Image (tube, rainbow, N blue to C red):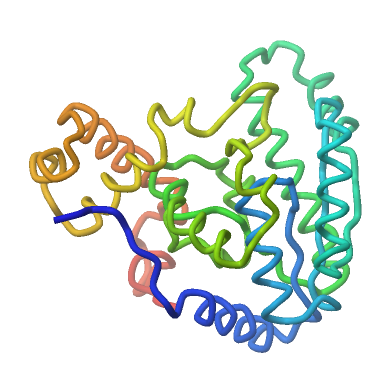
Length: 268
């Protein structure tokens, strides 16, 4: 018995169909995403390009002062290889403006969230003007762990890899032969220097995804620990994080006053 999530053979085709259908339904001109040099955004860019064509796929690189110059060149080269447009917009100015307004705030996570929200603001500003949909690059592992900024990188029109665990999307990226530098780079949200996903999450994705997959199958923590040979306390810890971050995956709560209420019994 295994709790390693497998990649379905129809994954790529399903995502292509999903993207084309939403572009057609919305009547927009194309898709826009933030391209960072990480595997998630690189995979989303490739899937979008293949689904709707390079002329309808657009990307923004939104670096701060700490963003490595070599990585800028790598991202630009990847966009050229895909044949998609790329615009580079430095975000130090807007972020510095907020720091000037709120000098008492010193928590780096708070400022990391500001950075993520500045980036999403830029994406939506351009997308509204050009009639594009914003493609989010969050994956299932991040969504379930609440490992995203509410109304920041969690704000998007579409999440094409949102039902793929990190280990699954790595497999898909390898199948699509994404650049080796992208495949090998340690996952990071780029919110502060030296930050990595797995360090913040507290365990590698190879272990995390087995726990999450077990929870998806409604297995008990005891069953998951037995099958995966991971510590029961670790499994329970992941389960607690999933429960604690439910609010990040929901619309804001609304008190029930009318006949049908948005987010409760008014179904879209």
